Structure formats: C-alpha cells, structure tokens
Image 1 (cartoon, rainbow, N blue to C red):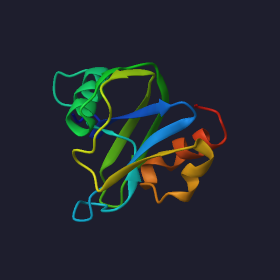
Image 2: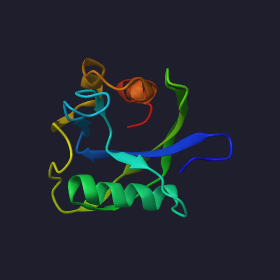
Image 3: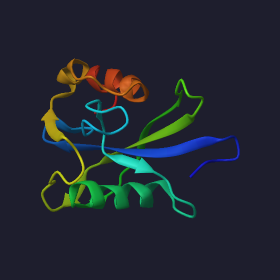
Image 4: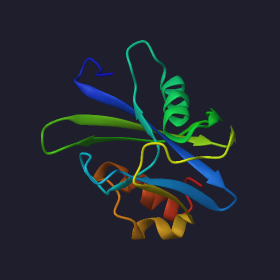
Length: 136
C-alpha cells in the first residue's frame, strides 16, 4: 500500500527461536537477489500492518503467527526514488515449523552474527540495533 506521501508501507517480522533470529535470503533472480532480509512484505489496500505480516508469514514460511509489538520503524529511499516505510514487529509465537517457500534459503542466526550477512540497505539499521541487543 502506498500512503498519501508516496511511501510504500512494508512489514517485517523478527521471529525468534531461543537466542536466534530468522533471516531470509532473496532468490538469485529476484530484485536485489541474494540480499538478506527479514520475512514480510507490502501492505495491501485495506489491510492493517499486523494482518499483512500475518498473511506474508503464512505465504512465505507456512506458519500461523501471533504478531507482537512494533519494535522498529524506518524510512528508506531507494536510488530509483521509491521510499519504503518499514515496520518491524516481534513475533513471539507461531504455529507450525517455518519452511522455505519463497527464498533462496533462510537461516537462524544470533543477533551478534547478523552484521555478517549482506542485508538490504533498508534493514541495516534494525540489524545494528539487534546486534547491540536493543531490539531482541
């Protein structure tokens, strides 16, 4: 969904398994191929951000998630002029085991390992916060 200011609203989930966070790698042929990101996607018309993330996690990972609080928000303008507003939510509980339905691969990583992944530019601020223990 694009807001009145031309900002694309995007959600992302921070799923945890003990002390690890789930990160996903885009497919090689996709836009920004092989970059790492958190699972989620674009908010559709008439959809709340939490409902969007719940839908995206079902589509991408095959899980039924309980969406927790928003823990980070950032705006990022890509070189092509598109601005995205990323809303990151904690996902404390979900049903089902995550399975890779849409990515090159996914991995469980400790927050301090995240800076070693080649993340999308728009995710790097939350990656730094996770690595410092501010969001986890």
